[in-house]
Every structure is written in structure tokens, then in C-alpha cells.
Image 1 (tube, rainbow, N blue to C red):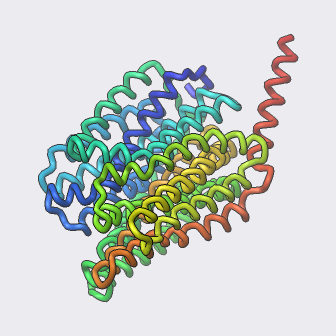
Image 2 (image 1 turned 120 degrees about the horizontal axis):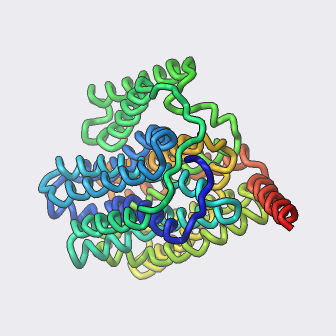
Image 3 (image 1 turned 45 degrees about the vertical axis):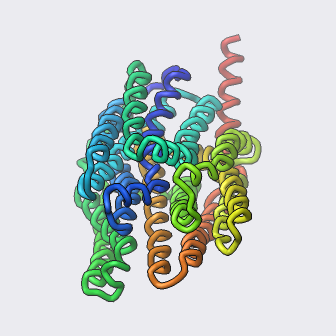
Length: 475
């Protein structure tokens, strides 16, 4: 079941739609927080948790889901993810309070954990060489492009149809994806590993990440020096120490640390975590525009049109740059450009019209960077990993995306909330957005240190040479 199959455009569309259930629809929460708050009467702190929970639970479960997809089948896990997406949306649609909203968001996160590594592995099985890179570019359109469109699409639906209709549309997209993928060949790892799942490492990792997320999102509400907050901080540190102490002695680890011996893979994963932290500061800009400048969710979304267009164009440009100059240079350029663009939205001291123009330009520039980064990063991650571990490796890579996005939202909104409570909303937004620099600087360092200039070209050259040899043999 592990052999390569002939991929089709229909399969690519089905895979992209599956990815959109998370990146386009589930992530639309970043632009509808005021609308949900008015409708359900939920506190801002609770909504910040609900916003970040989907990414957090995606990150928590994605490695386990990647390993399961290797053994049980990548198509099967994609379908499980789509069913869970539908269930999560139904919980959110019927919610009248924070409880069902949070439950639905958690289920959406587990859904994304199943879909993302499984679909990447399906692409690697169904496409080869340049065709694989093309398919991964379209996967990136669903991921980065969907994330870029989420403010516009979610804002438009929330403004003119009500915010719950976002999740009705998501159910329709999930069903269409299932239909398009019904004939794709199942794919599993050829060499089935017999190790038992590492439940100890899994539970320790979940506990540590949940405590850190609660500290960041609710620390201000609890009080930074309160016994509860201090206990959570101590518990998180202790759990992380225990996790590494226990895992390093195991042959069968929850996170396969042997993968990080491959430097390009390490660079791709760490920079992916940090890049998503940069992107997540968008939630502060969107909230500020609505609360301080009087924009509707749709009007806020309109400011992201340039971001989406630039991102979608640059995904294919990034693919060509990868083929011509390797992964390192476009990844470094992309991170710098994305940081400059996001930082421009922090100029909240500007008057309305000028600030609106600067925000539009900033989102557009950030889209150039994000699009350029997408394909080189994901290709350098999967091409260096053996087929029997690609599901787990993809899971770790996408765990980095989800956790980076979750902690980016949590940290930037927490900083914003703390400063709003004691000072100006304009200053709060500026500082909350500039949190992106905390992610950007180490991202540039990791890319420069772990990825060689020629990485990404050598594998492509080898693939082209193999294709030429096959043609010569056939002749």
C-alpha cells in the first residue's frame, strides 16, 4: 500500500478543501471575536482561549495522528479528520454559551491534527519530483492561502449572514472534500513499526502545553503573583523537565528526536513554529481595527485582500526560487519581509485614512513573505525524511505550525489585554503586534544556522537526473 500512485488534479482539490476546513474556516475566529462576544456574552479572556485552543489541540495531537496515519492509512485519517471537523462545527453552531463553543474548538483542533500530516503524506505518495512540489504548493495555498483569506471570508460571512454560518459552510466544504477523495488510493508505511504508542510522553506533553497556554491567556485574570498562576508556572516547568528526562531514555518516543539530527528538517520545523507566531499577531490588528477604529468584520477583512493575492502569487514564486537557489535564501528573505509587513500595522498613532492605507500595505507585504516561505519550508522538511517516517515528520512539522500560531495568538492577545486594562488601546495594539519580533529574530538565526545555501536544489537535480536516465533506458 505504500507505493507511489498517479495523482490527479481532483485529488489535489480534495486535499486543499480538507486543509481549508482548518485554515480558512476554523481560524476565522481571529476576525469575529467582537461579534461572538456580543452574541454569547462571553468574556474576552475566555474568547482568547477559545481562539487559540484549536491551534493548540491541533499541535498537541498532530504528532500522534501522523504516526497513526503511517500505520492505519493516510486516507483513513483524512476522513476521520473531516468527520471530526463536521462534529466540531455542529457544536459551535448550537452553542449558546462558552462551554459548547470551547468543546467545538477542541474537536476542530483534533480534526486538523488528523488532516494535515495525512494529506502531506498522501501527496508524497501520489506525486514525484516537480509534480510533488507543485502539489505541495497547492497544499500551501490551502494552508497559508486559507489563513490569509480567513479574515476576509469569515468577516464577510459574519457581517452579512451571522458568524455561525461560517461553520455551516465549513461542513459543506468537508463533505465535498470527502467526495473528491473517495477514489484516492489508501497509503500506509511499507515497513510497519511495531512499537507501542508512548502514552506517557503524550500525556506529559499535553499537560505542559495546556498549562503554558493557560498561564499566557489567563495569567492577567488570575493575577501574575497569585498562588494559582505561580502553581501553574511551577507545574509547567516541572512537567517539561520530567518530559525530557523520561523521553530521552526511551527508544520509542512520542516525539521522534532522531528526526532533529537532520539539520534542514530542524531548521524547517523551528522556523515554521516562529513564522506562525509572526502571523498570529494579526488577531491583535483585527481586534484593534474593530474596537478602536470602528470597522466591521467584513471591512477589516477587506484590508487583507492584498495579503491574500500576494501570498497566493508568491507561493508558486517561492517554488521556483527553491528550484533555482535552494531553500535557505527564499526562507530568509521571506521571514524578513513578513516581519516588516506585520510591523507596519503597529503604527496606531497614524490618523484613520493614513493608518488604513499603511495597514493594507503592511498586510500585502506580509503576504509576499508568507507566500515565499511556504513551499521551500515544507519541501525541505519532507524531502529529507525516509518514507516510513514521513507521517510522523509531517506531524511534527505541522505541530510547529499549530503551536506557533496558538502561542503567537496567546502571547500577543495577552500583552494587548494587559496594556488595555491599564492604558491606551492604541499603545496596547502597537506593542501586541510588535510581539512578532520575538518570533522573527530567532527564526532568521535558525534558518541561517541549519539550512545550507544549496539545500533543496540537490534533491531536485537528482530527481531530474533519475527521470533522464529512465527516458534513456526506455529509448
